[in-house]
Image (tube, rainbow, N blue to C red; front, side, top):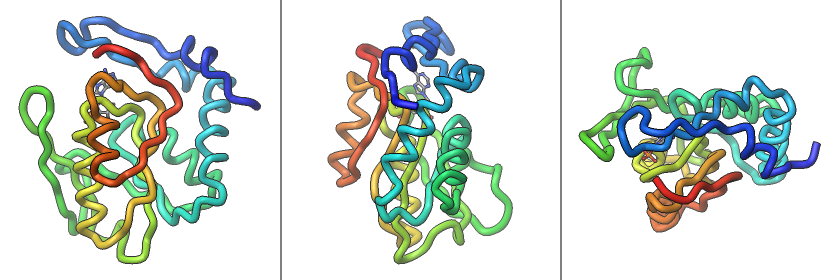
Amino acid sequence: MSYDECYVKSVVRTIHDWPEPGIAFRDVTPIFKDPKALRMVSDALTTRYIDSGITHIACIDARGFLLGSIMAYALNLPLVLVRKKGKLPGETICQDYTLEYGTSTVEMQTDAVSEGDNVLIFDDLIATGGTVLAAATLIRKLGAQIYETAALIDLPDLNGSTRISEADIPVFTLLAYEGL
Ligand code: AMP
């Protein structure tokens, strides 16, 4: 099924002033209720990476898990998880990062990726880029290289995709929304 940006955009729901005043929350959950939209985005993302040489998909807690696992299944690749602190058993490494207000921490299992791996990072949305950059730090600490970051949505006015590109990580997104 060919990708129709207008259709997918019409399915994403914007919830204003949530989770706090001034934020326009881009809710991707309706995509998962709409098989046509889900197939379009899954096919567009999967097709892009068929001959890319990526060895792993690292997906970010929690909405990144949904499309990340579809891509991993379709591409027959290992999926590894970047989770909020305290969710993963076994030996882990973690990385703090700054949010608009306060800080947060992401974590990976130390055997998730290793030297020689070529990793695609996937999340649902890039805002300030802090989450993806923290994930990238962990992946690089484990010795792997990063092929690219992909997301469904970019919020370019928050400069995250620019910050990620400046860290020598290419960025691919399917949709963009102006404003916060
Ligand atoms: P950031 O680290 O600032 O790039 O934020 C990206 C993470 O926060 C992603 O995992 C998103 O799911 C979530 N996020 C940030 N801003 C929004 C927004 N306006 N709408 C939906 N999710 C958001």
